[in-house]
Image (cartoon, rainbow, N blue to C red; front, top):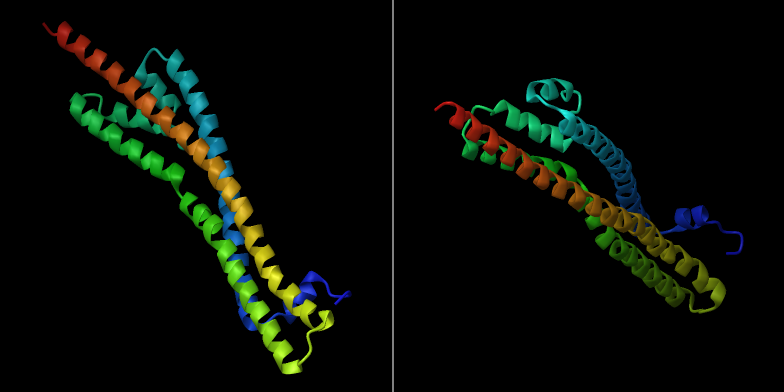
Length: 216
């Protein structure tokens, strides 16, 4: 037992425990892939949105702004502006409906894959616990067959079983931390989207009102 490493214990584990560890490894790999993807996505979203807001505040003509922000494909605010610009001659209610649809699409894009992180954080500890219970059960069955209950007999089997619990926690903890972190950033960005949508509608209402006043 003293010379056994974690890898040795995993290799000695039963088929069920190995299967559990494989499931946990899969959850962990996908979770870390999502974490890296979301971190890069939010960094780019917030960088491009900051650039767009600076250009929007300085812009005097929407035509010029539209051309200059075509490269900002990831920014939800730029996407909202382009949607509003494409319906510049439409009625206010039609523009509101379009902006609401774009808001929903952008919010869904920001929230994508967060459910998997939440699922990983809530289920992997129990999957690991199942592997531990199964391994301990096999250890006690082995004690029954041998007819001895010394530490040398019990310890290897329990150590193998507890690896499943450790693996479950190793998969769950980063997923929970990442889920809460990205959920907070998602909510902040959705609030910015909603505020900017309201700002666009106000500007379009004023623009349409001025156009109607000038026509008389």
